[in-house]
Image 1 (tube, rainbow, N blue to C red):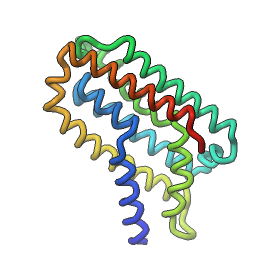
Image 2 (cartoon, one colour):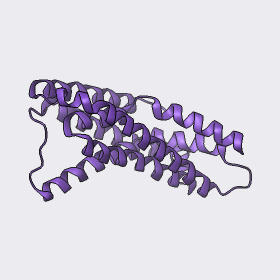
Image 3 (cartoon, rainbow, N blue to C red):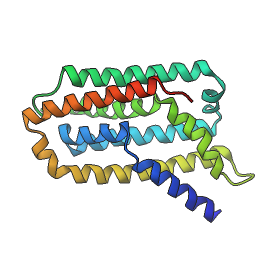
Image 4 (cartoon, rainbow, N blue to C red):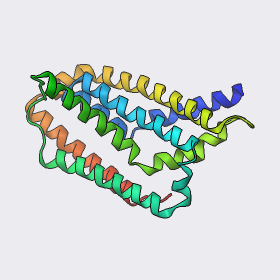
Length: 207
């Protein structure tokens, strides 16, 4: 069991460190909105991993493998959401960093950041397919599938939070320079192009 756990932690660490949409989203939030909202975004992203793990443990993830319709539906919803985020940044970039002036608007913007990270993860069926094919390899014989999938997804979530904290902390110094109006607008448009690229990659991907 020790060897299995070490193998799992090694594999999930490599997965976490691999750049993707989640990384781009967190870094963009850190540069444009500050470390607090970037942390909330990271929490939404990693919570999505936990929810996928619970779903796989309950057998719901297998639906993505068994049903072409379910997979394609979630895939196109995810691609459409990424495309929406990308186009919004591309054609409506920010010219000023976001400043919160009231507690109500602060809560609303934090919720927006959280939901953006959560939906970006949950609407990606490849995460579910990955979990349903990856996690069972590390479940001991006779153990509870639901419990182990949840625990492994929780480990992935905690590791993701630590890595995102490193990314946010590392970008803190550069964030002050990147939040200049002219640079912020360019960065938003570049990030929008990246999101559109991820949308296209997801839309044309196969299981």
